Length: 96
Figure 1: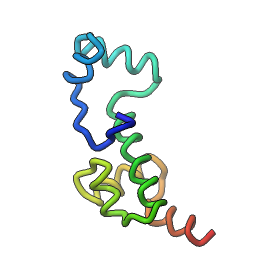
Figure 2: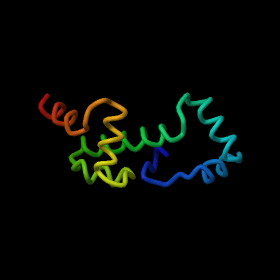
Figure 3: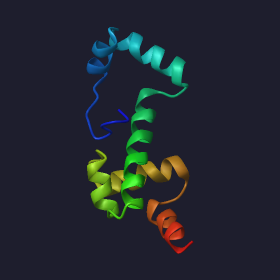
């Protein structure tokens, strides 16, 4: 997921790659990482988008390249995770 954050990474695919059932994979994933799979996937995509913006991509381009369905979806996920809109953070970073 880190190497291809925009990939679908379905639960069935991940379980199969690990040689586990889907339910067992979910259980072990959360036990090992301390984070549910869905949250980890979103976190990974947010990180990929943030790196792309830092390298000069627009928020919209970065969101789509990271696997978000739209820039609005990215902004909502970012706000839910960090309590601010990505445009606010990146404007602050660029000003600093």
